Amino acid sequence: MKIFKINEKDNVVVALENLNQGETVDRITILQDIPMGHKIALCDIKKGEKVIKYGYPIGSAKEDIKRGGHIHSHNLKSDVAGKLTYNYNPNFAEITPTEHKTFMGYKRENGDVGIRNEIWIIPTVGCVNSIVKAIENGSKQYKTDNIDGIFSYNHPYGCSQLGDDMKNTLKHLSGLINHPNAGAVLVVGLGCENGNIGELKKFLGKTNEKRVKFLIAQQEENEIEKGIELVKELCDYADKFTRTPQDTEKLKIGLKCGGSDGFSGITANSLVGSFSDMLISKGGSTVLTEVPEMFGAETILMNRCRTEKLFNKTVDLINNFKGYFMKYGEKTDENPSPGNKDGGITTIADKSLGCVQKGGTAPVEDVLNYGEQVKKKGLSLLQAPGNDLVASNALAVSGCQLVLFTTGRGTPFGCPVPTIKISSNTPLYNKKKTWIDFNAGQLLEDKEVPELTGEFLEFVLDICSGKTAKSEMLDKTELAIFKDGVTL
Image 1 (spheres, helix red, strand yellow):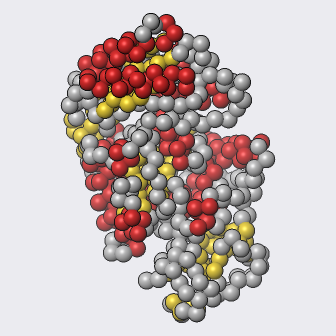
Image 2 (cartoon, rainbow, N blue to C red):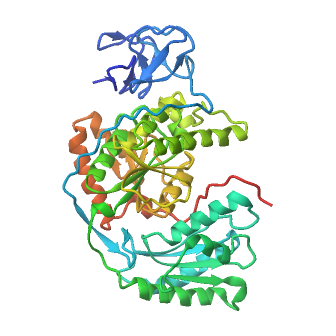
């Protein structure tokens, strides 16, 4: 098989390998050399006509395109507009419940379940980044077999921020402090910052003083020594937690895609969508984010909203993010990533229609603002940008114990929670074994979606039970916080 048609309505196919000008594939004569992952016209397409992929328009032809021709940036333009008015046309089916499974997790005193039992040292302000690192290094001696690691995090924010920008930082830090993967947390402030510990506590809510401790560096004669002393106490607390069997209904898993290629919507995103439906059928929850990569595919999600109220929240989610783009003079109809384009993705709708595959077919049960916690079972949508680091961090902040990250290009980054990298193609998996955890490229070879979904579920449950993800073998301690405001 050299080409792949995704939907019966499509007037394009995707090249599964590099194709040469003049060769004939499935009775289509290839008119130009076409790179793997790129689109080929199935029929003559007139200038101005819609190009259809995934069963939906991904743009309009800028010129007449002949059958067998290469379709990409040179002859396809985006049709995604700015803010729009939408109508609610419900179109979803319920996910049939299936037998639940278990994994080995850490049950917390508030009923939440973590898949790691780590000590986190979190700064309120970038001024104390070096201090929290020194506390981490001095505390390693107190790690026990029941503690999966001691990690300090760093970020450049927390001071000289105003309004909603400051609130985003405080919401982000609060979400991490309350995260179930953290057995215990030390919060370190400087003392004079805008986002000081007093302000942070307004977002935190009530905390267990045995689990969360606070240190204001300006008030201590030796803040590093005091911090190490507090981490020792936190280790004594966290050491009492052990892995026990936990139901899949306790899982909240984030869904994210990075640099894509022409296979992402066919393999990796499709696999994750199938997994999402399977986990939801077993009582679990998933969260789909990166709002700009819903542009052009938003009506699919809107019509899957369980209620009209959720539909209206999704309209606001999309239009408000478009407004954010427009406020800075940016267009809403472009796919800015060179990597995406190299891989065969042409327009933002092309990217988005592949991106939303990760959400499977489940009804949308909730729409979350940045920093808001997951509350509903099933599929939620989360406000966050497409940026890999910011969006993955946002999923962690909302309470996801794990992030599934699909990629056609590869990336080594990690965030505070295990971040499973799923390749869209086998060559990437074989080349980057130190980055990629799971190969969805098998779907183009010898595996069917149901079979591979079952294998992937078991793989994810192994990670939840303590198996190390590739991202955890590299540094995961730099926080990426969504910023939109003035710095004094």
